[in-house]
Image 1 (tube, rainbow, N blue to C red):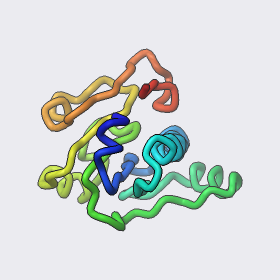
Image 2 (cartoon, rainbow, N blue to C red; image 1 turned 90 degrees about the vertical axis):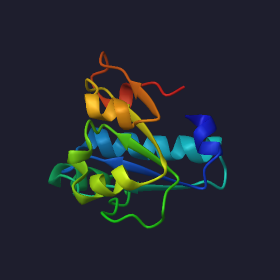
Image 3 (cartoon, rainbow, N blue to C red; image 1 turned 120 degrees about the vertical axis):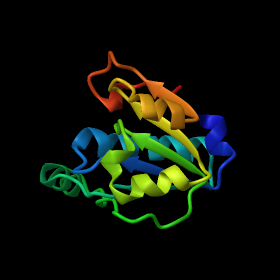
Amino acid sequence: MASKARASKNVVLLCHQNADPDAVCSAYVLQALLKDLAPGLGVEICCPEGVSASTKQLIENLGIPVPGAALLHEPDLMILVDTNTLDQLGKTGEMLKKSGGELVIVDHHHPHPDMEKLADQMIVDERAAAAAEVSIV
């Protein structure tokens, strides 16, 4: 995934609907890692269907901004974090199907067969209790 990020200009990390702390916090850690690996890379976190109330409270308490619901840039690399299907992204999922950008999945859930066909790369560890435990290196 590092080589894909270095070859990209804009990356979006997408979290599932009603995003929980695992999804959002994993996305923030991945964002920091990608910016370290590829200085100058634009990395945006997007939760198209919003975050849960407990997630919002947690990240506000940590002083972290709540991710937006709209894509700010046209990404050339999309990374689904803790997200098993495009259905979990609402209308943004439909946009991703039509997008020409690369798609990477980082998850701890059993891969959905449709996603296996769509993804350019899958980093999945079903033994992990959370997406935050999935090693991307």
